[in-house]
Amino acid sequence: MRVGAYPGTFDPPTIAHVAIAEAAMRQCGLDAVDLIVNPEPLGKAGVRPLPSRVAMLEAVAARRPWLRVVVTDRMHLADIAEGYDVLVLGADKWAQVLDPAFYPTVDERDAAVDRLPELAVAPREGRDLPDRCTVLELDGSLATVSSTAARGGRVSFVPEEVRPLLESG
Image 1 (cartoon, rainbow, N blue to C red):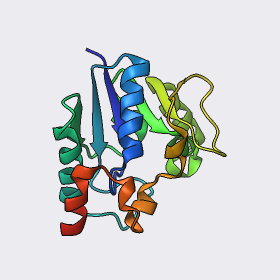
Image 2 (cartoon, helix red, strand yellow):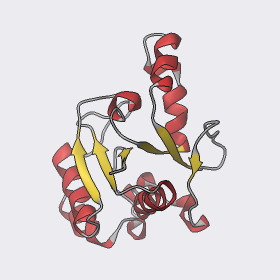
Image 3 (cartoon, helix red, strand yellow):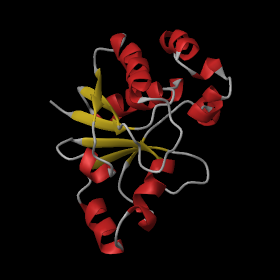
């Protein structure tokens, strides 16, 4: 069974997150994708509490049996992706993987990058892609979809099943 790791803050999950997971399934021949959240995501502050984010992800996964929700205390993507066949991420997250500020030394960063499994990357304008990866094919209309915009009131960016949880959380 081939499984992809798709770590993120998912605050809130968007229609683009779902499309990225679907594209990774299709293009990488995955049987399942784990949406992986951390109680205190690296490089993020002021996110919704973990139980709220997990409830939103569980609502998304309930309609998609190939999606699973996993909580981890691991911080770096190389550690989170350990044991997975594919790491699914956006090009903006790839920039974070390469940022030496998130590692004690550049050598430790390079070692972490070397440990990564196969990569499936959602392109984002103005962001570099890894040399070797599956570039996920996404509908161009998703280019402006972001969790930031969803938090700012763009409810149409959020899957229908998550919308009631935004109002209550």
